[in-house]
Image: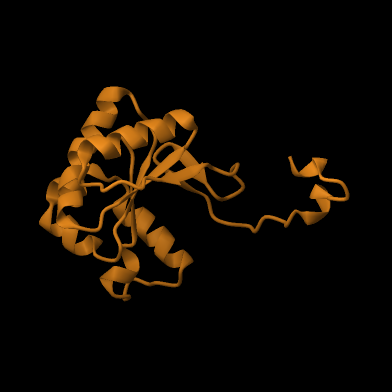
Length: 155
């Protein structure tokens, strides 16, 4: 623990938190004065359903309140609905954030079942885009970096 280091003043090293707008990521509130949330990202190939599911469940069990998946290729987009289904079957309620690497508009159009697995697509995308200076007239890749999902979304 840092407070045990001789001469270290943890209180003096704290930075004040900025005022932000709060948003809900599934059932987890982020920003707007909410407590800091633990977020993790899998390091698996999302197209590998079993491995991504296993790591997602392990992260949630270890205390990750939000889990991120890379959805960067068609095979990963095609795997999302099955991973989500298996998460629900396992009783995992951790919201998932899909990191689409600027090609979400292509993958979500080509894989409509992947698009159905995510909730609050427009509102979360718009909220995050506003925070980075993107507008409704920005190119699609500037607005579709992150799409948020929750296992509670209706299919």
